[in-house]
Image (tube, rainbow, N blue to C red; front, side, top):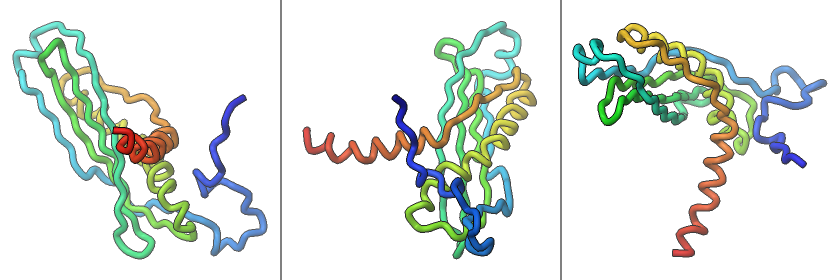
Length: 170
């Protein structure tokens, strides 16, 4: 038996037949942009003369901030570190952001939209940015795999709900 995700996790999906088009939930992209981009190659140019098989580490996070009434700035940050043993071959950090107009979303459903729907829209742009930067740095392109932002959101909710209980047991 599999558990199903509550329908409220994504308020943009559902039966909207007969709903007034002006009252339908909407998320509209106003701007997609690279907010920050950093590349470090601490052992260049010597690193290019060695045949190394690096291990990749990836960290990802999201943030959202309200700009004005219905405008929100959402960003997805990804840090990719390539190491060969203890040596860092390269470190790339990119922050892909977007400005979204979000309307007709009830307040309890706003957080899932900002944590799931908007990052899902931004992630392909982030993947392209990371791939392009590593290629231009002289390394094979790093192709990031798919990310399930819904699973990350649910995991974060579970951690937040479990945190007070853990502190009480100490």
